[in-house]
Image (cartoon, rainbow, N blue to C red):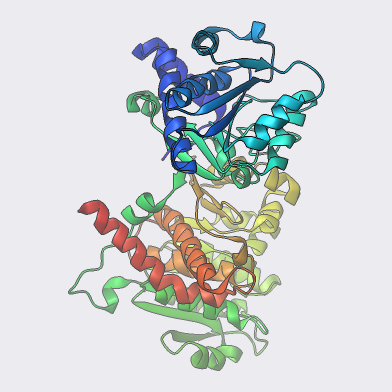
Length: 523
């Protein structure tokens, strides 16, 4: 599913009205009906329920007026408050406001600096609050009376259904503009807005419902929107086929170049993750001094001792053997637990130059690139980089705060500049493709913020690529699968005690869930 900025959604609305000929009043009516349906689900019917509707002066308020009308017709006792001067309301919003008034429903205008006792009373006795104060076009900080109303609603702890976006959330970034509504459910229209998917906005949206309000698909397709949600349907569609007559050679040979003194766990986690994701054969290219450790840790992988001059850290002398190895592989990953230094950088550079199979670059290999960006210029194959925000800041030469303030554009611009796929890890992991497409992941949880989680992701992506999934798809699917395994693990273990090994153990179940989803879609 596509994700839009408020500006893109405004253009979609404009084209729907002006080019297709669907009146704005029809779109508003469809939006209101969607809100009413979801409100009824939220509180178990509307009849005889007391509902508080809080509206603003824009089209968001118009949706709220129309929703109030339908709720009133369903037998609800509806109290409507307008956080604005009604004389400033125009167009379809004004039409719906006047219809409501003509039906005998009082609209109380809030114009005084303080919140009136009547609003406090209606809030205290209501079963539900409908939030239609601000829409996605809000720019400045929420202050004055609107801020007081929002804070009062939040303090009441009454369930809130927000129209299009919780009031006070920036539709572009998800940033809280001073204060915001914390909703139990948000009904957004046509397509989800960026601010509903990004933190902290997604934390305030509650259950997100994307409602069809009759916007033609052709209008959306005509804008060539490049930002997408990775959901179960998309992920399951990317799964590799598992032939019933296949053998281990048919399901990919994956090489993971990893390891240094004290960091043997990284390669182990990546290797086991690759196996648990379905790779037929996994090879661990590791420092010779440490190879016996891997022999014991991961019996199902093939351990390849590489030249390390007895230090437990790979040295440039291993590059010839690596060239031979990479020729026989379906996919190559480099970086987990490699350590740093000039020798490791030389190995990373050589791998970038001589790899002809899909290449996944992580951890210390990313740090080597950050110290010498010309390594990326040496690439002769498609590559995925999987940085966390700190590594991304080093790659881009900007602060972590700058990376986090605009994760999407940071990843997109780097991918475009260097012609690689970037998986920018973190809450709502962003995958940026070389052509400018963005995928925002919807799985995962805070329990996955633990050492080794990134190594598991590297193994998952490498495994999928080795099984024949196109590398860009492997990055998108692998990120979703990794997060899904984390969600399944958290349901069993809780988030606080989650470790990277739990993700590996839950990968088979996550894959099984995706396979079932794909089968259900087919049937």
